[in-house]
Image: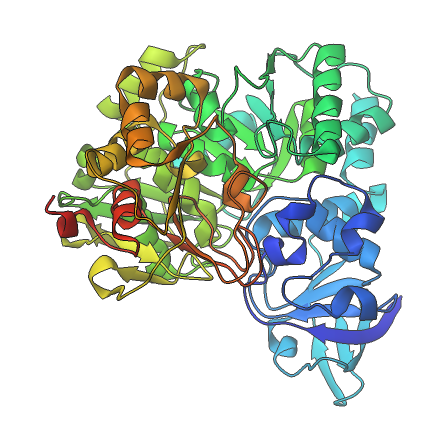
Length: 165
Length: 421
């Protein structure tokens, strides 16, 4: 499967407080959270993002809090995936546990600007910047994580294990 | 090769003789916790799965602390959901307002976390319990749901960064300054995916309260956990509080570390982290003139009785500056009572500070001390990200309780030495 979309580019250390500010954490409703996604770093994101777009950032994306509201807000905003130089570890596991694709591509992100059109081939590990006509390899997912995805997320994976006992 | 503290605890909980960094394991948890922000999502997931009983009613802790006492109708609904779930599923360790506290101070003080434990929590500062020589780390709500059902969590074994502490800290230098210094040195992703493991003769001058502060902020360096070796200081704390028997774990002499760094405690000054990253640190002498509007003393980082004593010692007999609001948050009801008995509460109130019931409130810009546009606060909390304490154009500076208290008197960031202390 190839994902196509436009890039929304941000810098290093994008933290969970700017992805979804804590003042909105009195709800876990995805649509409500999506309205405020990235609000404190980019007031235009939530209204301007189109379904299938990508959030692209530098290193340590998602640092800070463990709030699952962060990947929930991103997913509900319509973004297809997050591409970053590296991810903070809790954000990384949360994204997997709830099915938001995340892509580590340290060599690719520097050359991507906001508005660039990207094509991501998850199976073959290729990221193409259509605007800049450049292609990069991306890391593939460890086998255990693929099992999680195949099972339909962590809870279904656990349910399968419980039945097997 | 031997194992680090983290590897040993993970191996035990995965039923293995040994584990290696990078290995994915399924481990048993001794305690799984959630708060009023994160557990509602986990509770919905448990109910959606049709699960009628949790894996162990005594090994789950639910603590309403972020927006507690209920800050608005939406958060009241979240906490009601938690309360009803706790009642229906017979969760033993549910803590109601009036009997609660900030989760990461409350749970070890209640003796619910003991040395050698493996604890996960749907809150990033769950790494606090590393101070007790336990493995603990923050996860998301889905992980919490899975752990509540199965008693297990999937983990990737982290490599370890060994941090050797030497010397004795000088006056007004506390655990907060040690961890801010380390984060300033290695950066907010300096220990990404790693365990921080402390060692060295400097440990003997670190009381438990300071160790909790240092483990608490491991996440601010990107770490999975921050763990201290077990010693006499740990034993004194654990034996006075532990509700379960515990087994002491020690790192092997030939354990393998990914990297090592050392910190000479005697060379440190108090540290201040400037906006908007905890790694943006400066020694106090290089802060310059930074006027402030608000001072917050409290949080899971620095809301312990030792922290309140430190701030009170500076503010006693002085007044909070005219242009400043000072807010004090004891982390638990027990600490609140102790502060009252020791006269600390009176000291703060006489000085012109507000003294609040326990809550995480202002630390995350939730309630009870939110900043307006352009306002500036110095806080003993853990994060100074954009918008962390309120308006996206407000600013947060991080420091230890003594520096925060001195700043409250001065009306700008400064140390107790400027007050003749």
